[in-house]
Image (cartoon, rainbow over all chains, first blue to last red):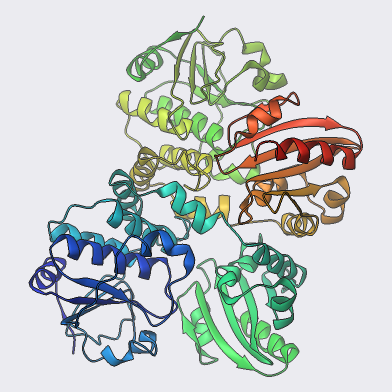
Length: 316
Length: 316
């Protein structure tokens, strides 16, 4: 049973610890990377050994963050998780730590409480906003090495301030980070305004596949293995692709069928927030948030499409 | 010769005036609409008659702003321009006022100084940031009717905080506006996350037309009249389309050829800021900013493409 503590207590616990390993979830995103590296930098400024860890490789585009921290080797004495909601997300390399977490810092309301102590704030747009407050409580001055990853966490988790979780605090903290040296233009440009040729070709083929149902209230696209091969795109190129069908004017539910293996599909549903797509996905063994959820299905694509579209139709 | 005054003096001048007409530039964008409506609401809260005016219709998507203000009829006694840099931008209906402007509020360094008094701050990411400060100086409390248009101006002129002009002030003022009631999620969603079917089809056809030159450092797309017809897109659907070729990884100059009439092309050039594309466009009688410029050319599209790509190649 995890004991909930305050931000101040998180700071106190961290200041008492040393040789701190900071765990991110597998398939790390900008918020996970941002939290782990910002906290590692801050703890080192407090004279401690600290190192981020992840079961997967950190995507190259975060190089401006990962390259800012020298590797430290040590025997971990204190384990922290950031932006990590549940033990399956530890991944193969880090699963050994699942019962050894001293402190869990997270913004997922669904956090399963696997740590000794934890601070969960589901109202924080990004987990980086919590980490920033803990760093402040530790009395550590925020420099560019800390500001860049915090800014990255806030900006990526709010979709460059486009999602409903972008709060007054998100904007204000982003401004604070710019004042501390964060390269906001460079980061937002890299994260949101740069696409590989393969990604653009994949988008073109996905748009070609777009179909509409229920008077244009449902839009679906397909990312088949054929599309992946023809475009030359890799898994890393698909980030945010599920947002495309929902962007269409008047569409209430956007659905993306992604063929992971032959006849095995990952289905992503997006709504603008009115319709609870996680309730729909739960019926098929999936889950997620109200406006963004998913599930998996195996079988003939035409049959799967029929099932999903008819299910989505019941929610309109 | 325009006399430059301070923000405080702008507020004083406005508080002394009445029956105030606020002029926007033709083809109004979110910043122009935002400035004019925010200022009109504020002046009415100060007990004055005030009304925005534009030579063109205001695009429907700004309805949440325009619908918030009742129409007032009066004989204009005091003329203000917002976000308006030069007299050709007054447009047909408002050109009658070009020598009668009492106060010019702008953030274009290129402002030609057509008014009696003016306040120009080229460092303001959006002109709405200046208008917000003037409203503060007038001592008028910002409510939702003012906060929504100010937020819209900041968000749209900074490309949802993606462009280099998004400053500490832009983020902080956006946060302030949210606290005053601005519907940030609704606005950003409408402005940046909603596309017509025609727009998406136009994007797909534009992506199909994409070509690369100079080892992928130059990317070009074509929006021909044929593409406009096949997609069913209208002029209003093309906003931001010129940004697409520059988004491609490793591309230094992105070029969009848009066929306005048969064999008459508007050419838009975008760079990530390193290369000065306005210098290139000036050689062909055009102009613009360092990272975003344009020019017009008439003739055979293949010849024009050769000329432009070869010119762009000289800047690499």
